[in-house]
Image (cartoon, rainbow over all chains, first blue to last red):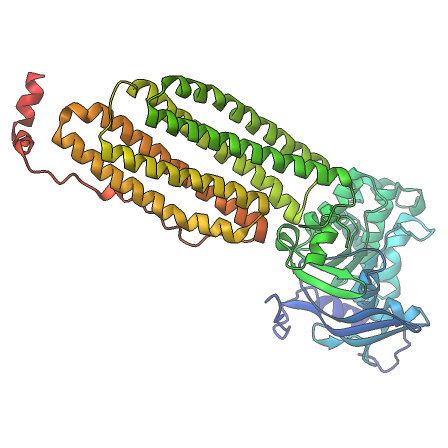
Length: 289
Length: 254
């Protein structure tokens, strides 16, 4: 896309081209997974991740279908979050972390030299466990991404993006009269939806969620889950969760990680009613491993 | 056996649920056994007792259902636990039906106490009763041990029950044709045999549940459904044949 890999500000033309080209998703060349038969957004093969000497992920190969929700489950320290962070190269930010293996996003190797990680993270957005709005106004939280990526030509367009994103995140009606109020002043659930609005403002193709509802009450959790259901119409969503019930409720496919290995992956209805592997069964039913 | 849950109360509740099913199953089997003994010995007192026993079976069904609902509400069981809880509700329902059918057989004993069934019928009915009872006790064992192989074996064995029913059906028809005075008795015996055959079907339903709990897969192969009585017509040639032509007249006279 660009010669200079360190570039952080996309040109307006390039961004609009990308935004125009990607959401349609009618990419005929997109490979079909040999595992699940779906059109895949991500194909990952033989992934090994090391933190210094310690290996955190062992030879994981996983296909992630587009326009669906993939849940990653497993006990703490099983590598699911580490794997998730590989998908938008967040692990690049950790000095001692080394990632091996193939990650293809629409057939394109995201670890190749031609990929700018900052642009990649606009395509593969992320929402964290703890809502982390910028200490700025609600408006600025959402407008920041589109602005630095040059997605809007003028103020009117930017206003539009902010409104659309907040609407998609089911937050607009609650904040439309106080867009200048600080984002940190919202409730936990609202802050998390603000972070989702911020993630979708850059028109990503994939949204990664690392326990997006674990700090929220049941009502706010239900709102987020409803939102996930709506977003999957247009996005590929990968969610890490510790709640079996949540994984069962929101996901189409579920992958179970244990001690850095992918133990089992399959349709959610199968994983939660008749898992093939005993380790999976022991984990989801709350038994000693 | 599966290893234990981290939450011990969960294990205990599942065990209690399964214990109730076993208890209910043996109560229903005892009920059937007594109904059959009462039929054979023409013992109306035993039949009365058997009918009363059915209440306990019904009560256990409610208790099992309540336990299962509590388990779902409080533990949100998944995977094999979920299958076990759902199966418990289904199996309890099948056992309740089995109890009802056994009660129905016992009721006929009270009506039939004075009558003497033809010897060969008595023998064949006893054989069929034994077969069904063995199927029922067997499936309870398969449930207790979560033994999918045994469940499949019992499931296949239902063919024999169906064959026994078909042959009793033919036999009773023959008696009724030979001597219309036996029609009342034979009709009751026929219903009794029919009840036994239905119990066999409920046993195969339980076998399917046991298989699902144990393996997570459906036993959806075509079951050897052998009730061929719908295709059996009495082979008859005699004076009644001529009645056909006079049907309208006969109707007019009545």
